[in-house]
Length: 122
Length: 112
Image (cartoon, rainbow over all chains, first blue to last red; front, side):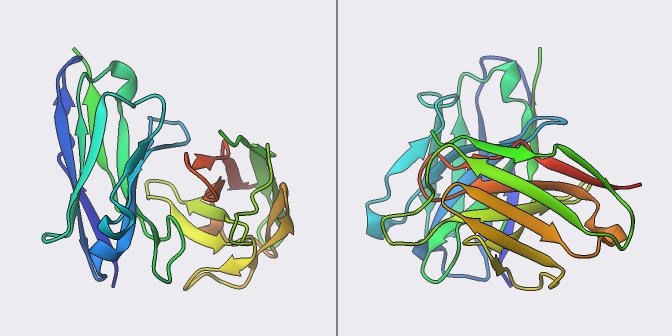
């Protein structure tokens, strides 16, 4: 059974940093790209970024709203994807989901975690 | 970026009656591999999104057959043949043809 579990959400002040983790199980993590998607309170879904597999060179892509502040990385040995968030702003307040993106025999965004809440406030 | 536009944004439905949601993309979603990566997600209250339909019309594992998807190019539709109480929630179309992934605004399905 595919499972994704996010952790690391917290209340932080503007300008500070936070790192989220997404721990995967039930599939060969290294064979799949992983995306982060966020949802501000009462709002819709916003894609944050993706990290491709090492086989695809592992490059990352980001939404314009977080580029230069957020960094996605991965540890295939531990089946974890990370979202490093720097220079946080109040508008980054949201539930952050990780989702499995493209990979062998899968469909983009086919599995999602339960999400972790990040609140940015003074 | 590809803009996804859904209509309606709210859909009050009587139990047992059909519901339909439209999604239009600002450009063609046909990928260079020939596939069209248009998906539909369901988000029940307090829950994370869940994949319902992928590549326009394919139901994901465990999705009831009252859900169906159709369309081509830039115009797509999600239909629920007979709405049940468990179908209440917000439905999003999303394109995964290219990055950045983009989503429609969401359509809230509620029971009248």
